[in-house]
Amino acid sequence: MSNRRSLTGITTSGTPHLGNYVGAIKPAITASRDAATESYYFLADYHALVKCGEAARLHQSTLEIAASWLALGLDTETAVFYRQSDIPEIPELTWLLTCMTAKGLMNRSHAYKAAVQANDEAGEDPDFGINMGLFNYPVLMSADILMFNATHVPVGRDQAQHLEMTRDIAQRFNHHYGEHFVLPEAVIDDQVATLPGLDGRKMSKSYDNTIPLWLPEKKLRKQIMRIVTNSQEPGEPKDPDSANVFSIYAAFASEQQRLAMRQAFADGIAWGEVKQQLFELINSELAEPRQRYQDLIANPATIEAELLAGAEKAREYSIPLIRRLRDAVGIRPLA
Ligand code: TRP
Image (tube, rainbow, N blue to C red):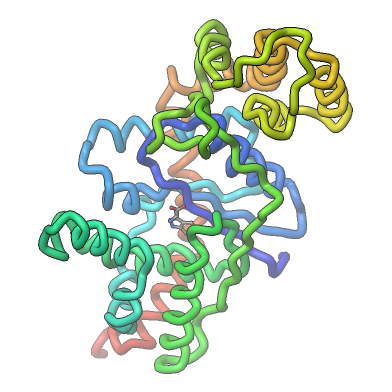
């Protein structure tokens, strides 16, 4: 068995878009094919609950995200793919860790501080709209990671602080109760493209500028035609490096295609033509998985079975570990 274990969670609070695909799903599936690493990927539905109080949306998002990863070729023979809420040891560990976590550490969380500051600026009570889920979020995330003694955690830069906190919490637990946890390392890949959205800002649900991953062909084309460009005419040489549509093209293109497109920009290609080529490129990559996605979505029982099988594999690790941890903290049979 390898001793590199990579683990990451995907919050189930939205519909997957091209930015998720390029920035997270595709690199993770590629990484999962590396035989020297054990890969754990899970749907962080408890985390989704912090921000998403809409039951139907959370449920639908879980379905869509699970179907997306499977349709895009995640091999569940080699990777462990599960749903957080199917692992009851995680909330149990969350409590054990909560009791080893300094409140002051949580007070320093960027996400929490940002919420307090927003209240301040709005003249609200500092606690307005803040639930304990938001405050405890980093402890739950620590439990996700420490439950499987992951050595490496691929995340976006915005999650770096959470990994620092996880290490802090693990260290404190180890110091107090003995060496139970590996200290995980964040893996932050700055090479991975952050995809711009329709308006040129980072593609994000919160900016309402996304291109959903599984649009049917016609709608995909229509959405791509909406990408904002400047008003240069066909025939005018254009600058690829300041063009949003080029950045998106580059994220899907081979080196050769990228160079050819640069040349086409210099030669004055029309915006409409760039977009048509972008559509064809993306569509050729997604056409096959899209069909698999449609088949999966039509058969949620298949997805459910995959997730349950994944949870069973994951629990081969979490059940014995939680037993040892309970014992370590003094929760054990009296006789
Ligand atoms: N907080 C992460 C995010 O918003 C999602 C997540 C939850 C996660 N638990 C995790 C990521 C454990 C890595 C490891 O992106």
